[in-house]
Length: 254
Length: 337
Image (cartoon, rainbow over all chains, first blue to last red; front, side):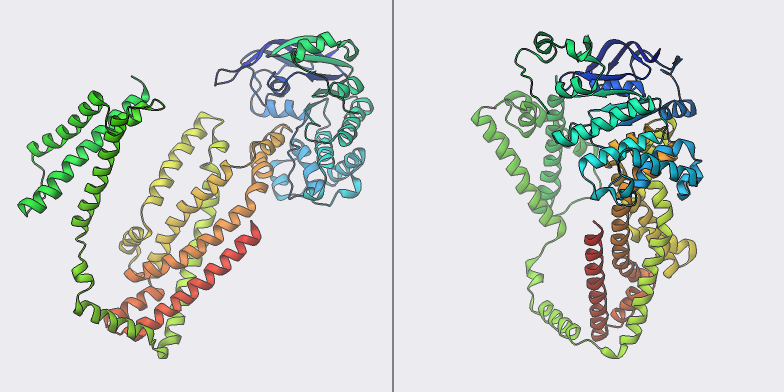
């Protein structure tokens, strides 16, 4: 069953750039989908159109059978709670503790007033600690995020997303600012989230070796259009040149 | 006609009009005729505008004015045209300095006149021998000034904090209504800030009577506007990534501000606030000069009596306190930043 459906989605930014050009795509429940393509090919915009951080110019977005293209206010917030997101730059608060950062993922489940005074219910605290265990950071719960390495910060972001009890996780180049070893560690946690909790993952990536290792299916974008859709193993040298251009050479990340 | 062309024409017209006004009002009336009038006749006005029009015409004709230089943009003018623009600019500069000299009534003769130098010498000698018998009085007045500044800062803080977010574009741009509020607040803040605290003091002294309270209110108003501007600019420069991260969890807009923006601005806000208190102490001294109470008022009293030794002591106290505050607030901000 398709969890996420895009129907002919296009995005034209105010400066005239057409980032997405008629994208139609289905993401199956429980799938690990990789999105590849050159910088500027529309990967980020595609992911951000799914949870409406970016508004599609035309087309429809469906989540779990519901049309979410025009949700506003409370309905939009409830919809967003069902989709976690992690970012290339981690987007965590350096000056706060790991636990405080993870609790941000539960904001949708706490009243505004309680969250402002910082009195999160005990069961949420316990859930946050459990999610930190999932990403292997339980003993860092009370450290400031500033003290952590890049890979650890990204794991904090994963734990924060897990606090939403999400059905889907959008990962926007989650390992692009990490070294190869750390990249694999973060990707393995995404894989675990996908397999252990059955969370559907849509992840944009730069390295084909990571795609082959972790993704079940690949979508390749070029100039805002889907130019390839299939299994990672089907990306031949010919397809590679078609996606990345004639000049491109593949680099490995092990 | 491109935008640049229009900019060039406007610049040429304004500068040409300006040159005509200065040439007539300052050079002709002051230096040649020897007397000027306060009013402007229709003929004169026409002549001034004519000067502007003439410059525009020259600029369009031979492309040798500043306006032509702006219009040219990336294109290179011929050497003689560049030289023309350069000379036109230099003449304007000379004319301006000349006019400034005349208008300001600058007079080296008076600056170095024997009586003037002697009075100044007497004053400085007195200031350098402060009268320490009024030290307790001066300190008490100084403490009052510091408290006035503190109260103004504290009173201005809550509204400034609120406005800091309401006058930040990235917080308010989502909805047309909030954006309209943002635009209105922005104008209000800029207007309030552009009115000097001294003028606010005059307004409030009519309202609540002359004294420390009027001085405090004046500074409160200015503090709100000044801090709101600093705060809102800080809010506008936060990393949007964290805001998006909080938004993507489905958080309420108020939670987005509290968890996405506030952690990024707490320390800068604190630094701004301390700096503002420091500024307010200096400002309270000046407002005291016009009756706002505290050390400034004491200074005016002794100055009125021409008791320069006492004035010397007060100046000493002010300098010491301002120096200590400056140093302390700089160190504090260093630690926070």
